[in-house]
Image (cartoon, rainbow, N blue to C red; front, side):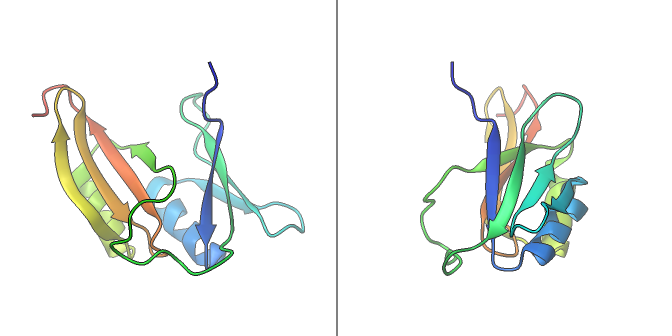
Length: 127
């Protein structure tokens, strides 16, 4: 069955946004040669996927605009703590924390460049 193997983040200022994701999740983000492309490594334990970052080819999405692409959701151990950290680093809340019954706690945020991403704290008792 085909599965996602790579994600991409579009950025008005890739260096600034790289610092945001490095600070938030400890990802390693490195420019790829002379190309205007950054490789995003999310870890080495075999779970999840890696991705890339590239310069945005137009205006950033406006706050409140409908989602027009896939949303990447990151597994976190403490959704409240990570949300607080994201807000300190310049993110805003797109949809507040909600229970996904039997799965966990989910929040959607806008990064400093208004890209939407999710964070999920697994908790099979969430309701």
